[in-house]
Length: 256
Image 1 (tube, rainbow, N blue to C red):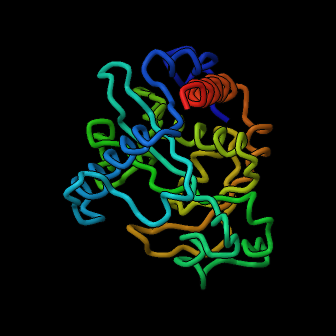
Image 2: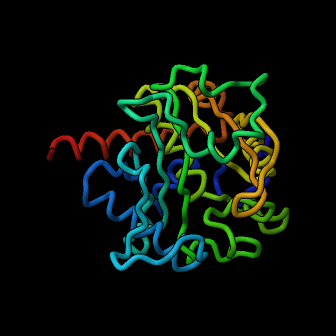
């Protein structure tokens, strides 16, 4: 667990600190979803070259129609700088595999969990986490779409807090909770579980590592376990992010 002396700012008020710099926005309208697709295009197509560039300037695939999307805005530059999505199971065919089930078909340890045996409508995959290069400029972050690594928390002499990736993850978790999603799956870097464990976020590895744009391992998160298990340091940040997700949903529905 992190100690209060690790950070030069008020570690017990991460929520207020986050809201000075960033805003989480659920993307429930076509206009906001397009903003997410443009962030993805910048990161995945232009910067990292994981996907081919598109004339539209938007990176879209076949899973977006069944997904919930989330954005993070930098208040300093008034621009969306990151995004993520939750791929839900197909409405008409819940048993249809999610992307991780295809990529990890031979590596999932079904003695830990069998995704096909779960209530399919209550599960989703966290996907397309992306942050533009301006906000992942530290050592070790250039080649990653989302900056969470050994340098993300800084050093003893120069500590820092990874607001953007954690804000996106917490926003995604709250979006899942509000939509009745109990179980999340994600392909993560092997060290992510260690980093999140410091924060009271339990990430369970459910299979062997695979090569997928780097070494990744299939992992599982239980939404309510995360919400209930956050430590006292993370709770104010989660509460701030959750309030923004709810406010964004309320505002967008009011104009629907």
